[in-house]
Amino acid sequence: MESTRTPLAPTFAALGDPTRLAIVTRLMSDGPQSAGQLQDIADISAPAISRHLKVLRQAGVIRQQIDAQRRIYSVEPEALQAIASWTISKREFWEGSLDRLAQILDSQKES
Image (cartoon, rainbow, N blue to C red; front, top):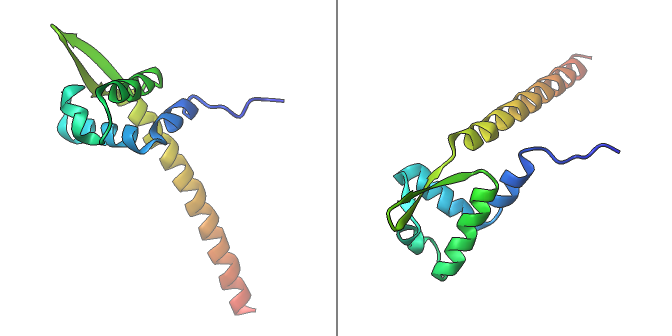
């Protein structure tokens, strides 16, 4: 049996957590930030933020750069592009399906 896991599965799994999604949203809107700057995302400890950042890094959603003593996090553009491409492909599928359904319903009205 072929696996149903796709390269996007870890990405969606990582983004499925509200805190991690909020981190990515912040990084997308405000640009690169340190873990300390992300502390106000949720009412959780610094080690918990670090664990969320690790999950996002391992899924390839964000990247980490070391700047002296600080770790700076930013969104990985390729990961977001993969999500956008997947979403667009599914949108085209549903639009096509809905168009076919509308044609069938219209033809039944005319009968």
